[in-house]
Length: 173
Image 1 (cartoon, helix red, strand yellow):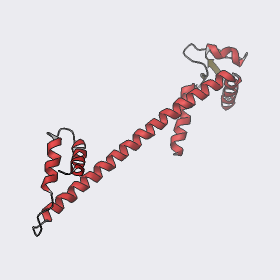
Image 2 (cartoon, one colour):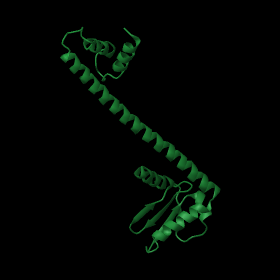
Image 3 (cartoon, one colour):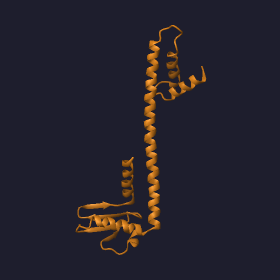
Image 4 (cartoon, helix red, strand yellow):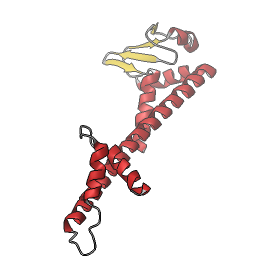
């Protein structure tokens, strides 16, 4: 057999659906069944079989391409999330006033509420200064905060803000 034929056969064998018995032997046998007919012999069935195989091959390639695109998108999301986490963490460490600014911005959103309780991490409690209705929440990490109002809780943890940013990033793509 020519090397190109073996290479193509091995590709077909590797892409055989799971559960197929001995795909290494089935693919070359299928290819052998469509080998060009001797000169002058009818070729209709062989041509149809070649077209069927090519259709299947194209469909398999389309599925592989879609799967690769999904995996690439997942990898990009993971890299962007990791990078954003690092940048935000570094920013909050280098510029501690940022948490106070974020908190002020969130409080402006709820300024009409009768009661607002601010929950922050022990790490950030000293950074935001003295404020009324501030409580330390040991479940919160640096950069996290939550606002409790009469209607519920506004979660502003770093992870929640990051998730919102990533959702916005995905929507923009």
